[in-house]
Length: 130
Image (cartoon, rainbow, N blue to C red):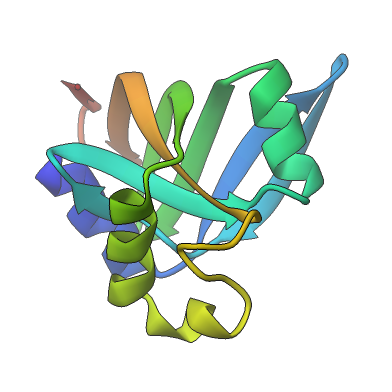
């Protein structure tokens, strides 16, 4: 999992795909952190993205760097604990202008049933499950 997290961090931006009824929705994200041995992302509860995840937690993340890409599919689980939110915000202080661990909007979600696949045009795919 740490290898997956490190690649995401090095990319800086990743794209998260959710499902809205029967349509895919993709948007850029930048937050990914490890907390209590789980890979977390962050969004706002008021956003369509969060509402889509609540209805269907199956997502896929994709990012690309130096001719290699990562596709991470799995389910996202909301963690409403203040400790999890604080950890994310402390590691990403630029979010503090919009979010706070004690507000009703901040959402941190962790991956379960995750399958990460590293690919490139020159190497065989590598799969990591967590």
